[in-house]
Length: 393
Image 1: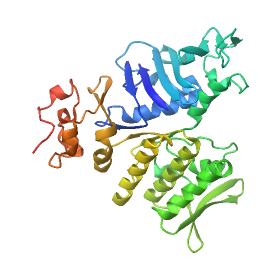
Image 2: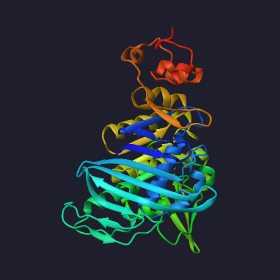
Image 3: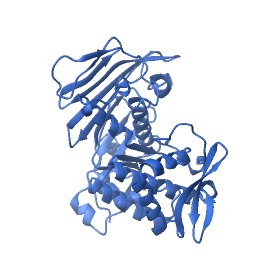
Image 4: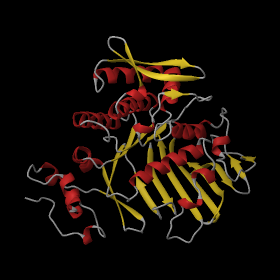
């Protein structure tokens, strides 16, 4: 489970720290960095797993506009029950904001305070699982994660477990309009793009490698938001495959023939089933987008239940009133920033009396009216608002 994120000199994040639990809900106005948190997770995941190079994932335009420094720093705290707490640190140095050149000057991974991997732009040292003895020295690569280049061996399973936690992290920022029913990828799509434009290829991989997850997704769809749904099927078409959804009695529809809401449901149900199957993390940007009102609350309750049962970790952003009122009081984190300043995070501090008072104004209404002081948010934001008590009659 991810427990902490630190980012410095990345977009709107300057010395920014965010702590996570099994379920965290990011709240705040537009432009405060909610989606940026999810995007950063996807970039760090792709870097650690070897799916991207430093310059592609962290180009100079990702530096803070108001900061003159040319170095970015990221840290992640990850807790795995079988091993303990990992701390991953990545430092990238850019040549200049105007030049598309950068290099990794530091990449380290420690477990319970002891090093597993130590990398700089000069040398790389790999420690064994016992974290004792002389480390193995490797050649550095300025643009590729050293951790991504480590092959699994009997004496480095703890490092591989950390990397696998990233491989089991799904980041979804859905755009059904970009989702195609056709896949022609030569290599398996093991991790979908955030917009899920390659969902058809990913589902083929899921059906082939995670049969139980694909069956659970089909079962949830048939019992939930897609009445009459029976199963997925992929049909060959030349060098490509076409993903279809089979409905009763035996009528196939291409995935891109479904409505935006139906496509979103198909993707969300598949993602939840896969996350349960691998015990990973599911990061969702506004999951209630494109869904009908009767579909939103059941989805959010299931996500909350899965997180409470530790089936998988959930991090989501929320603007929708149903999501805010259902989850914010127990799991909300408020993000705020000045128009051209850095983002800061505040854990919501709702009192028990406010949460239980039926006459209290709903959290979504407090947010809509700008009464953030009533959410228990500390200054400077609260100081800029009119003072209100936690219960407004």
